[in-house]
Length: 261
Image 1 (cartoon, one colour):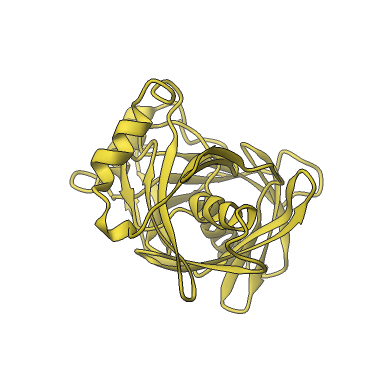
Image 2 (spheres, one colour):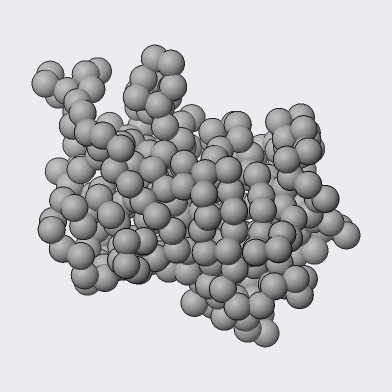
């Protein structure tokens, strides 16, 4: 496009995204160099990922969300999906609940007052890796590491040693450092694809809450405080894991614009 691309910048508890109306299916999503350039915080718009709103691929769905990490890789994104639904709602003027699809299947989103609640995939049994570590797949793979104080962790050093270690170097993994606080969980996250700490991670928050539930540290809706704000996770435990998993939190449109190239 010679006249550039229109975009919106959205954030959910500090997890920020470039969101594009791509219902025409014209965005070159294989152009990873473009994605990296746009997501760069010094030479581009700056974001933790790129969200494309596309035509629905499933009967009865309102739209399809394509999510690209800043390195061009694809995954499901909890906060990104909440931003996607809010953008779609703004775009269409429709605030009713909606079904949408993403890389990991079908989801449902709705307004919950001024917050957005999105249904996550069913999650199988939380895998206990060791005394302080759980492995949980919430649409994206996560390790949940229980620590005394997430703020005291040398996050980049410790997370990268795990993410680029022999077990995870090829596919990558997100690493979360978590503790139980008086009002819920407190955590910090290193995200693969971003390859840095982010202010919030929806799939990571969900993984942390399910890990806490599996360990008997929490029952019922779980509030999780990240550096960017508080999210809430709801889930129904089953014999094989968790169903009716929902992520709830705020989203905000930061600005709109047009970018060339």
